[in-house]
Length: 165
Image (cartoon, rainbow, N blue to C red; front, side, top):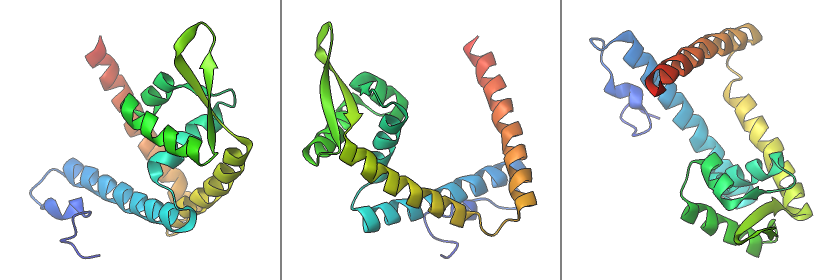
């Protein structure tokens, strides 16, 4: 990939920009490059998309299922997006809709046994793509990066909490 690629946000930064801005753009670029690889792999190996994988991942964590509104909130997408993806997965026998006691308008969605098996296979491959993405780093580098990003995350949580107060 060359520096003019749309995915290489880092190319936008110049030496006169703050070091923090250049670091932020590097993080975004790395994230986008890894996501591009994951999207392509899901499409090529499983004929699926990252949003479908993400929805199934949420359901895998909640064996009793989630209400559509909960799914929408967890995935940070509109209810219409969740409905469209869910419809596809229902048609393929990967998820099922169930009524919610006391609310005729609400549905709970959960993985079917077939969906659980399919998701497990995809999740194992997904993990291997992520591991591969970081193969250029030593265990010590990985630990250091994890700790440093943890500090960034904690600081952001504190800033966000101040904003919300």
